[in-house]
Length: 215
Image 1 (spheres, rainbow, N blue to C red):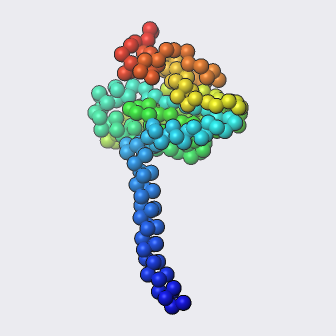
Image 2 (image 1 turned 90 degrees about the vertical axis):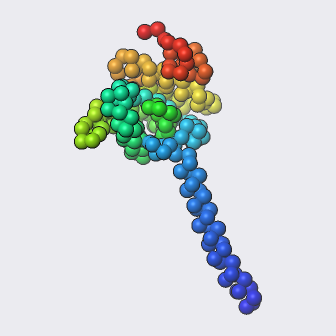
Image 3 (image 1 turned 135 degrees about the horizontal axis):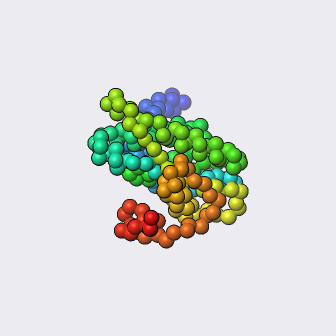
């Protein structure tokens, strides 16, 4: 018995050390999947979590693109652009907490979210709240800088079939672009079929496709 107690006592610090090491590793892995500027999930981490949310009976996909972001960078400098991305990340995180949503930064000034909702009215309320949160001025060196955002959303609805996240993100992107061109804060659809062709996986006319969409 004494030998067993001695062995247990000797093993306790080692077990405790492995426990601390495991916790440290989990935190490191989680941090590595966070975008360092916005603090949100990276694209891969977002998509992994978003697919689980899309398995729920009613959910929606949101795509957010900041307005005049290049103008802010050109006028106030890249440090100001970084400040806008950080502020947008905090606002999206706060909105996600209130709406039990998964939010990620897809790249540049483009963000995406997936959230469960109980009704069309609740979804529209969430959209209005998100738009309001993202359009407050950002304080940069003591000066308020106006920030805008265009949002496209797709209401998945109570569907039993499997939803293709990439396809729904394309639909949300189209709705976002429609809202941006019309000067609207957001645009919502229930259609899960993209209306535009893609180039290199992106809607024709988007930056990086090498093509321009007709005005």
